[in-house]
Length: 298
Length: 298
Image (cartoon, rainbow over all chains, first blue to last red; front, side, top):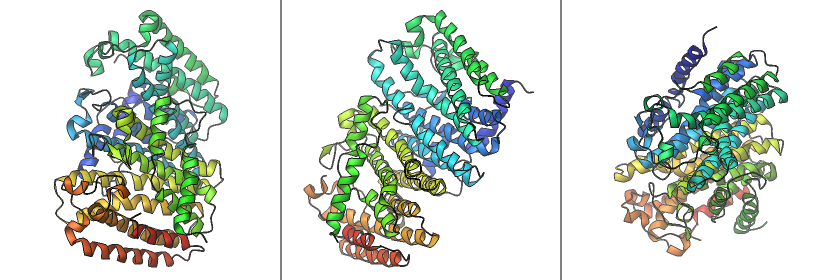
């Protein structure tokens, strides 16, 4: 069995080859809109969310090929959220992962439109699980509904709105956890459930993956808060302590660095325990991914 | 039979009552995000696109109630496109239909997020045609795929990008027609096809509605260009000749006002002829809507 690092690298490579083709080449799309969309789709990242889709399908013994359009969809949604998040009216970031942000290259108007088009195209991509791969329409419609719920007003966008509204200062850990839950965990939970739906998961399996995803999502975000304080600029591709400079309240702010590190470990164990309740055929990669996220300093 | 004006008014009233409920009240959504979404959803307009969904379902003898979630979806997509279009980085409009634009009330960041959430929620709404009304998943998935295609990079967003890129000056009528086709006709064609899918339309009926929609969409947009030159400020709710002030190229610019008026008439006749090829049980309201759009100066 390959290491989890190799698993991630080979899947990321395959995903990137598919992403660059995901807006059909024969479609009549204004050239600079297509370029702007592809620029951000190909701007790097570990591709963790789409890998979770594929690993969840695999955990149930399902087809990774049939899950691929849903995996591409979640990367499109993640990418659009970064493009809009970086806009001057939002976080006003010039760089992401060491590259100029979309609006610095294509202008604000095109960045807004490219984000809109990426979000819209994610829903197109999901339908191809049925159209191209023959996954039953009923299951694919459940994935569609869940993407809209987890990425929308009560999900990711809600988390971003709460984050923005909270920038004047959060006073409770619960408020921060609401933001983390929706800004980060929701897309992770969606990714796992999407892969599971492709493979025809039971309700109990979906529930196990939801618990798993909520726990690793929060661990992931606390780890991000920690790295933001102790991390190395090059490893993250953005200035360290940018959150602190903006006086942004993070997890360690509330409970300290050491307790935060402990919390990441606890959540990871909790996640793995929840996963093992699901009775999956091949849970190994998901278990390894949980550990990988916790050790993420590479 | 009620007049088409009464038909539109009573359906608009019903649609507005449904729109205000469309983001489930029990969902945990940040208050100002919900307010921002609802502000623009309730900012008026004739609700022509959702009425086309309902009228198309009716033309096939289908259920308007089952088509309602798809009708709400297209109004959400239309609304999000206006919210993003009005942003300072785009058209920079302070007013729409006599009311302050979303970003003037809630700020730019919230307007971006509200638009994103409305677009996302449109896809949620469509799934409810199956979940709540029992329309077969296969049909509802076709509607999902078509919304993503007609509203995305090769559809409405593509048209907006082309419009923005063409602001330095279009030199050919074909370029302007590309913009009109995608900025305007695509959502109209989608609306008609969505209603038809709900009612289980044949391929020939979908094709007839597509021809009908493309013709009335272009007529609608040329009429808009004409009204922008000869119209009355109060009737449109925005300053007349705003396009001309921005030196924007319109249909009358290429072929003159009189020829443009003739073109609107021709397209309307062409549309009605195309529709009558579809063998619909009840095409009356769609025929009346085509005429209504042409006479739209009220």
